[in-house]
Image (cartoon, rainbow, N blue to C red; front, side, top):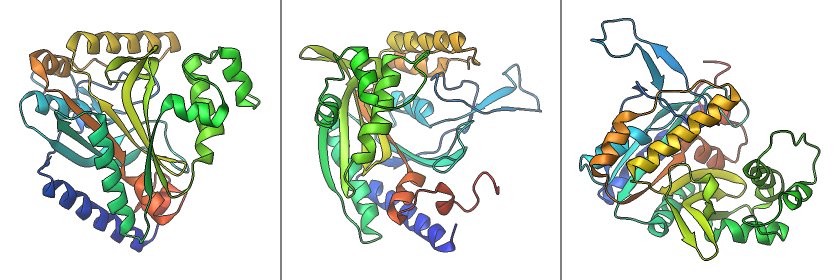
Length: 316
């Protein structure tokens, strides 16, 4: 870490706030501790124990892995377009590109679909790059197009054996799902070849990778209305045309719990407050989360997250 990196972080924070103020998007702050946790099977959460009087509320609280759930509650209450710039926490993620606590920018646009949100996300990243005298051109392409161009196979319909053969690596296939193989192909075959200086917004993911996004029919296949934004090979942001159906959201939480049970993992409490907010009516919207530390890494041209933090996990 250098003090210059901290100064650049402060400049980036100012840019973010000015960017959204000019666009009429409200900055909000939401709780870092919650009685509910993230059920996503591939994300591990920290817990803390409250030592005071609780009035019957649970003592165990879960540190947020993103600000998504409370922000959606605000949207259901009518807050309108909003963003939060704050710390989030994920257990088990420490290394060259990961730190257990990091900074995430998350924002929601009421009445928007993915197309304008992709444009806005790219505009913010381009403005950030301009702080260090750099630029990047935006390309949008579907998940299907990217895999077809890079590997000559259709990720939506290719047999599992074809996905395995395309990997060309030595890995134990035991327990790996189709989505696992698609992820391996992305991280090992496709992503490393993304051109430096290009922003790629990849959209329309397989429906099985819907997370909290809507699922729609595109021609011959169901797809999740979500996108990921890459700067060169570095993933920066993940956006959704947000799911607003409370029953479907609960079903996805329950599927997460089933997967966690099968893996012998802790099952965090489901966020009933979010389900209640969706049931009362969350407006149609699109939202995106962008990793500020990742963006700073790209701006400084470093692969080490420690270079953009005052003190990383090993020195905190």
